[in-house]
Length: 163
Image (cartoon, rainbow, N blue to C red; front, side, top):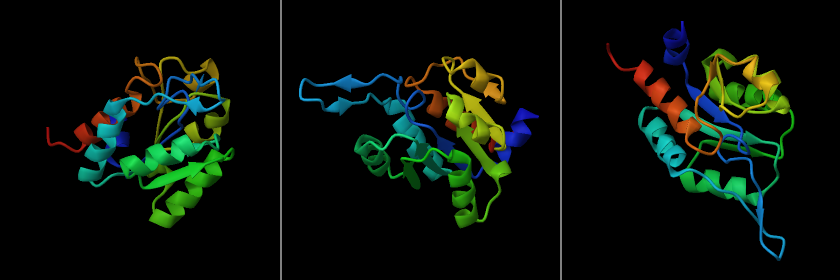
């Protein structure tokens, strides 16, 4: 069943804080915020692009850090400051002429649940809140910020390989 769901994915979307980062916020004495991203997730974006699979982020955070990271990785979509993630995913699907069934989404918290419940393949990191874990197809053994996006990308790419 999981393999069948993965094989039709055309777009992978991810939350940022708690998925692409460890959820921690680091501040300088001047009040400048920093986030830590995993380079393995960055390589996953390149691998997905090579496989013809689009990717992006949908984050409620309005931070320019998120936008900068998405631009550096050449992600197809970077929606920041978005609380209604399901509506944003539907908008992106409309733009790409695909359905939510063809979308994988990685989320970790309560505001991710409506989208986790409706996509074709839903994932959360090992340290996601229980409400998210209860709603997904796959709970990763990897915590947020440590390569869960890469793990999902590898799964999707592998689903397209001949047996």
